[in-house]
Image (cartoon, rainbow, N blue to C red; front, top):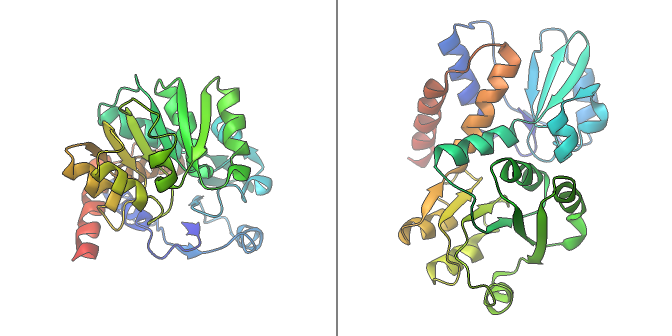
Length: 278
């Protein structure tokens, strides 16, 4: 797992559990601190013993010009979170999209109503692709900086999906676009870093943001204030752990060519989270 910061990542626990269950005794997986500036040199230093890499922020877009090949999802969303290394080439994949689709499907979420998306970065672009494939016709996107939303809007247009940008600030939303909405939202999907969505937790707690399902991509610390507010209001919650698990399972499939042992990976990941919480 490459990224910055990356020491907190639970991915080594999930992948290691998979290798153990699959009997891949010689396989190992760890976390390496790496920023955008250091990525080219690190990729160039990897020998034939490397099967693949997982990428987290800020590398999902930075890796694109360093790839020899990319699958259609990478081209679609403009971000890769997985690199396969074989025969001296680098092939990029995106497992965030299928991971989100699986998490939504397993939670029984039907996207037959309005969707509110928090954020417009690389993970949000993956979310737009996943939402479209899961049946959403449109999405309202709350952004902190409209200048950064170009790739997301372009993606939505290419997918034939309506995307409306709205002001992110929760206090302005309360008296602005949110006050003019008569909906309950079918889904609120937060892709922003820890703490950024806390204002939306207050909107949920106060009843100013009626929503049927909350999906927060953060998995630690858990529950986030947004998830806690949703649970207190008897709103269905999807944890970022489920997304992490499902996208990691797809990475295991890509890297090993074997069927990932999802149950063993889930058990190991939840045990690790309980230990961290303790």
